[in-house]
Length: 599
Ligand SMILES: Nc1ncnc2c1ncn2[C@@H]1O[C@H](COP(=O)(O)OP(=O)(O)OP(=O)(O)O)[C@@H](O)[C@H]1O
View 1 (tube, rainbow, N blue to C red):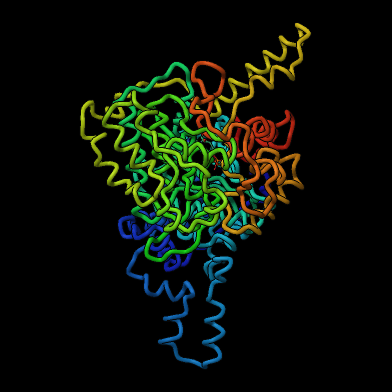
View 2: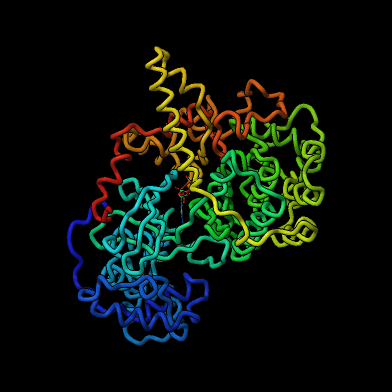
């Protein structure tokens, strides 16, 4: 953590009631089950200074609370209801107290005393101010209780490290969240990810085990269980061809994880191979909840349509829907199922327009009734002039027959027809032989992360460039030929507000040297000609292959296209944007990250 300015001071024992509130609410009601841990953590918190290095994950994280004090906590939380009702004293004083206790809904910050307790417990004030709810009831781990082993992943908003927990010896993944100068907006998005992760508890959903920071730190690490592989990396490996029972095994786990998320009111909104992590025991876990959101089908509110990596994005999102539901994740799951069986991505569009045409070409263009019913913002602009007939059955005629009804359902144009993850789990795909294999029977694969594939590609490219120079051949030419599309999630997607999107772009653009991998500059965001802040689809941009060949450019085992995740921008541009110069800020980050002990 780059900027630890000083040592933590002794922290007083936190107010028991505030700790209780945090766990019982943010934990989605799991507080009671964890009552015993609370007691342990309370005793560890008192006298923090002398015990700081013995703060253990099991004691310090997810500290819940006794639910018996919840009513009182509500009051302390500042909802005002109970604070005023039973209190004596001058009216004026009551009002002042109520105002003081009331959290600022814009900042979702905690009332003052909770803020004070969080800071005393070791949280930095910038985090407590903006993300008080997300850290409620937890205490931070210190960076020097982890030993960094290697950088293992890089996402749009984070770098991920493999590390050893010195206190337990356990290998973990530390996701270091990048902030734009601690911009409250960036911190809020991270807070949402933490809140969502804390609500989820399922074997097929990655578990947030804690947070690493300190009072004087300006960075934050999310601690996760370590997962050896991701599905994108495995699937891109030319040596690996999944059998039908293996595909069923992965899909069953994916749908079980999704079922849990949806039942807990969470939409993932970025299901793709690189976000499906696998451990050496064959267990699949849905990861990366950076774009996830809470949703309530009974209390709809508009959501951004600019989510999900392009190749896995549903037609309603591409058409600008702001009122959507579980169907967006089920569509992505359908793309992954077909991809696992085909051995290649099924709809690798290069921009939104092309993506939509690929969808219509394979899944048929929407019916008149659907256009009328859906009233999607971009419907008139993108209604194809000709009608496409659905041809999933013909295209995938070699797939095992019981997979077809499930693929047809998940890839329905109308989201209502996609049903639910629970329904998918009951489909004949899972109830007919050959059944899903047991995860423990899956082969143990060599390192195969998207990052590993990227490093392999880069090394190969470097070697080819070097040999090209020796042969008098231009390295530039070699690079162009070998460029592969890489995972470029919707760069503006982690934002519900266009203003925020634009601000992030401006900040990023201004810091282009150090953040070049984060967002494409505005003029390259989406396909050429897309205006910043305007609709993300421009009908006037028709790609050269708008007539849409069904021949997929991806060839596993052929040219080195090594990822399953689709670009938002033109592939060559994407590679360029994400490549970091040696010695750039980001590449130096690991070396400079002195608060994590290097091996
Ligand atoms: N628990 C984990 N164990 C091992 N590797 C992990 C873990 N979590 C993440 N990674 C690796 O780090 C990469 C980036 O992580 P993650 O997707 O969470 O970050 P992000 O910034 O949100 O990424 P994206 O740009 O894809 O949205 C993953 O693709 C994965 O390879």
